Image (cartoon, rainbow, N blue to C red; front, side, top):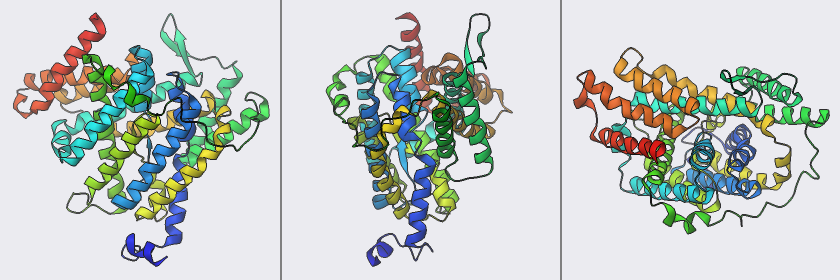
Length: 436
């Protein structure tokens, strides 16, 4: 084990192999829900859930192993919640794009992500979009996926008179969502490691006991075949040939890029890695993430990103890349439990979506609400995403309004040229959506 100590610099980081293994397992338990939530979300786009399950496990494992060995950070990766909802509900269902073409969009976005990482253009792009709008985008996605959870769980339903309304409490499965939300919230407040996973486990257990969920034929089996999704993205790259699809690619790129960058910086601060407001080896971390995103698109899943649940492993002492490596190995082992997909219904995953939405919405506190030129576009992004049922539409509303508001406030010179370019891009995007 001497080479482990030497390579991961365990002594220098004041940690041990035992502590790193515990941290890696803790991180996996905290984020393992994605193995079941991601197939559920992408299944709405009519993707094969078994193939998505395997793709999710492989892409997550690869990202974790790269992050551990290359960047040597205790940060885990997996297909990101929010952007997978954009994939299914905005692009496939909302725009009527085939999932094969949408997956090709992820592939192209990941190639661009890889290139801007290699050529070190990330700082320029990060600096172009104001921090307030970044926080608004993150929060808006949180509200959007929370709304999805409320709807899928039966707590919010369509209503002809009021557009949306409260669901019926006479529906037995709705009570599964309520139970899961209460249990998960209590566990989160009590800071129990793996609270979301435990909440899903208990909710599924209640469903099985009450007969609301059918018992699976078995618990363990070989990993489902990747055949329905593997390589599909590459075969359909030629379909990325319209302004609408390029806006989709841009959205995949921007949301994944800024979400990952923000998460990496936040986790690095928690672990004490930041030096002079800079994150060491950030290029290698982004390279690990973008490579996993590229591989994930080929396997057959939505964009991969750094997971804030890595904070659970850091909290129990994880400080080196060995933590991420252990998490990656756990994802590979997790592929044996695909039969549980039939147990993880919409009502089981709904509380997880709602809770993650709450966590993402915390970024609202960083928005400068005291200046209308910032508050108005930020508000349109945050509110626009759930109300239009589209992440891209919400972003469009805010990014179109931002330069206008800044010019009105006589602050037009503060707007980066890239933001003016995005203004015209999203004008074209909205025209395509509404006119043809």
